[in-house]
Length: 189
Image (cartoon, rainbow, N blue to C red; front, top):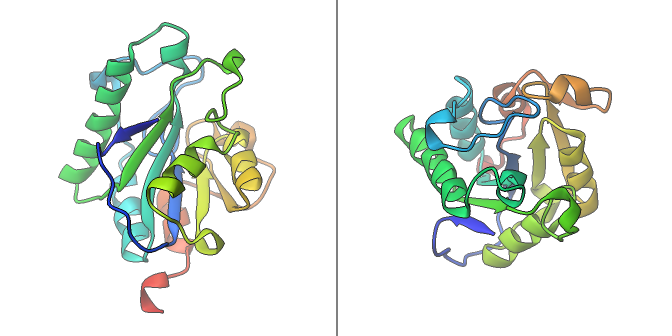
């Protein structure tokens, strides 16, 4: 489900960074749900990371599981408000996000959009085509790496959030900014 923007502009297929939200861009604690916009805390290095990823020629799409909706911890409207706060907070720091997609279902719902299923990526690519050979997924959980594998994309682990417990499958980066610095610059070619 797309949280933002309301409408997307079709364009040519471009390299896309499919980024996990909780634990990758903003702080996350296992077992704790962000249920109000005021609880969202963006990592200090995240805006610089997104600016660099964008400057290197990637579209930035946030993909996130939000089972707190399906479990009854928050409403669909609250989840959308949290995602809008993320976009606004990043924008105020000079960072751009092109779209945000989220799965509101509980794990037992067996939907096609809950990571590691590739439904969110499929929906994003349907809205705005991606150059899949030069796109990637980055996140702090094994499910993010499995999503990359299922979508046929490169997967990168960041060691923020729950990343340290998912470590063991390279490549792993200290945080999203360290990954951004290591990415190839596609804007030159």
